[in-house]
Image 1 (tube, chains in turn red, purple):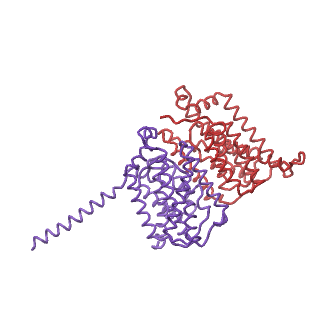
Image 2: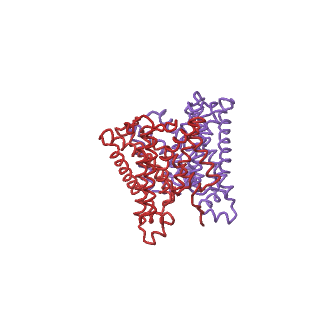
Length: 293
Length: 299
């Protein structure tokens, strides 16, 4: 029983970080209708910014954390301006966006490898202490708790922005229909920038948390494939769906590696993706999309 | 830069071209985007290797077996996913491509994640060139046939093609299976060129590379795909001295192409190979006839 609870808690903490990434993904998808494959690169950069802020610049954790989040927010906006905005102006089909995103992703990953930072694995300094909390015979790692808490707070702030502010209303309207909202006087160009900025902020946070949980290396962005699965699982373009999908995926993954074999962890994730796409392509809570003639 | 080195690059380009030709039919002519073609290459590679090593078949028969294996896999995948629209089809193929690789990682019969060494090195320059020429001729004839026009109709307007009586699902399936067979042959050639197979070789990034090549060459252009495969396979090799920076340049170049010339190099046009040959033929024939005429005058 305690083993079960242990796995559940691990799953929750991983799932909450997946949620941070999946929400960033889903936000962009809900408005632009394309899968932003550059998201992984942004997460990786966030992870590095946080690492170097803490080691090379000896910032305290909170400051490093904010630097990473702001840095990736800016980076995401910059990527939008350089790689997507020209396509958007031309009404290019979604595939061009995807290819462009992949170009960005290849670029980011390899510029880190080619730069003096290099392909080495780096470990974050320990911030939260090593000894776990013990609750009812279950060990709960301090880092796991912090991951869960930080992710939850970030998501709550995001939901507040989207549901309660005027900008948030613009985002919701644009997600519903980009062209109509532009006609109604929403500055969609600005909304898209804000959405990329928000996604970037979340990516930076996720990158730092992931770097702390595991290690920092140039391919860490590949982890976004998982958050992508989570987003599809929950329903592309739906934020609550992305969160639920991520948490479920995190739990399924930890249970698979705990009770079956860690070799099957990724396989199960992809099989789940295919299963969802076949049985219920719009995911748990996605909006139905019908192609119109 | 001796011939041996250049030959190696050309063989690799040819192998990539095989897979790219198939993807060109699917993406460029039928309008379906796949991010899982590395999976079909993997199936082709492993089935071909099984044919030569475990079953003792001749290389050609094993290649056919590999192509059939990939096509069969694509049939089942297509049955499930071809009804999905746009982005969802992409994601589904991505999932399948990765799933195939992860399954191969766990099949100890094929060496699992450690790989499968000591395959016979049967692939050589002549075989690659001949297979590519056959592949291009088949594809060109297919594209210019009635079926080819149906593929293009589906690409342009799926709903309209359905209403005028084209069986959209069947044609999509055909395109997928043919493209998978091409990828399978490419995979089979690759395994028997390197003499070594590992599931890691067929990662998601390989599928991306193939799609990028098709788009770089130009959607809906076979000659574009040929040029694309030659350029994009040899370019990183020629930039070897650049070493680690080449992929940085590659990534930036992809973005640059997308925002500056999204129609690709050829942009739906073909190099009129047939016409060029015809012109050459007539000119040669004209020359010979002219000479004869001159000779006749002398008599």
